[in-house]
Image (cartoon, rainbow, N blue to C red; front, side, top):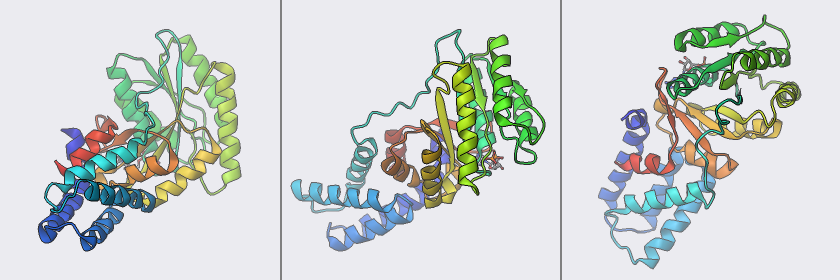
Length: 303
Ligand code: GDP
C-alpha cells in the first residue's frame, strides 16, 4: 500500500495521459506513437529509454498485428520491465555479512537529496529485521549535518559515532569501526559529505574514507549507496555520473519519489548507469523506505 501511495503523483499524471491517448486514438498509428513518446519523455523516462521502448512497441505491434490501442498499456508495461531488466539480474537485497561479522554501508550523495533521512530509515529497517545498527557521522563539512544525524539516531534508537565539525571524516570512520567491533554491531552505516562543487576534493575524501574502511574491515564497504533526489529529474543522472567516477557505487536509493510526477527517472537511471536502484524513498517518515521492484513499479503505474 505504501508503495502505491508513494507513486500516486506519477501514476495519476502518467496513467491518465496514457489512458486519454488510448481513448482518443483507438487505432494504433504513427500519431499515437508520437504522442505516447511525448508523454513518456515528460515523465522523465529519458530519451534513450523512450527510443528503445518505441522501437520495441512498433515491432510488437507489427508482429502481433495489433490494430487497436485498447490494452496497449499492458504491452507498454511488459516492454518497460524488459528494458529495465535488460538481462541483468538485479540484486536488490543488500550485501549483508553473516551473523557475527560487521557490515559497513557507505552513503554518498549531494546535500539536500535526503541522505540523512535515508540513513535513518535504513537503520530503522535493519533494526526491525533484528540487526544492531550504528551510525558514523562522516559529513563533518556541512554545518548541522552531525546534529541532524544524531536526531535520527535518537529517533530510531541507535548510537552515533561523531567528532566535531571540520574533523577528518576518515578519522571518524576509524573510530566508528573500532566502536562497532567492540560492541558487536551488525551494521555500521556511514554518512559522508555531499559537496560536489569540487570534484577533486570529493574524490580524494571518498577515496580516503574508502581506504580506511577497507583496511579495518575485509571486503568493506560492502555497499556504497548513492542517494538521488527523484524530483531533480535528469539532474540526478548527472550527479550519478559524477559519483560513479568518484567511487564504486553499488546501488542507488531514489528519494522523494512521492514528490514527483516524473517517476520515470527510475527507469532512466537503471538503463543509463547500469546500477541497480535498491530502495526508493516515498515520504519523510521512518517507514517510508521501500525496496525497489521494477515489475511492481511499472505495473503499479497502470493499476
Ligand atoms: P541530506 O542533506 O541529503 O541529508 O537531506 P535530508 O535527509 O536532510 O533531507 C532533505 C529534506 O528532504 C528533508 O526535509 C526530508 O524530510 C526530505 N526527504 C527525504 N527523503 C524524502 C522522501 O523520500 N520523500 C519526501 N517527501 N521527502 C523526503
